[in-house]
Length: 98
Image 1: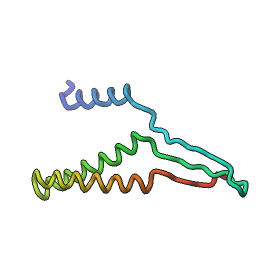
Image 2: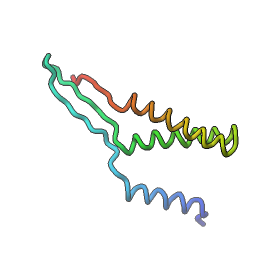
Image 3: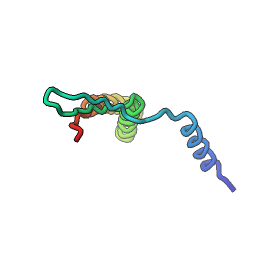
Image 4: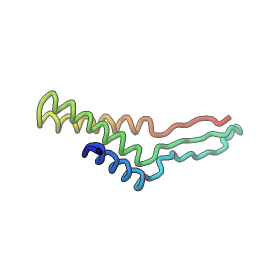
């Protein structure tokens, strides 16, 4: 017998599979003035939103444990700002292709 929890988990998984947007990163390459091939790999918008949203959710959870409702709001703001800073710092990777 399938429990309600298992049924809902399966339903959510099916929805994610049907509405999934490709998560692949965009890679752009060019030849620099020294003749080396330089590639820039950027994170997709969906992954960026997931990082910031996950950080805000984690901050809200910690804030709720520490200070109740008001702490959850403050934790969500702090977590979201921290996630946004992390995302801006790490979303673009530049490497030399061999």
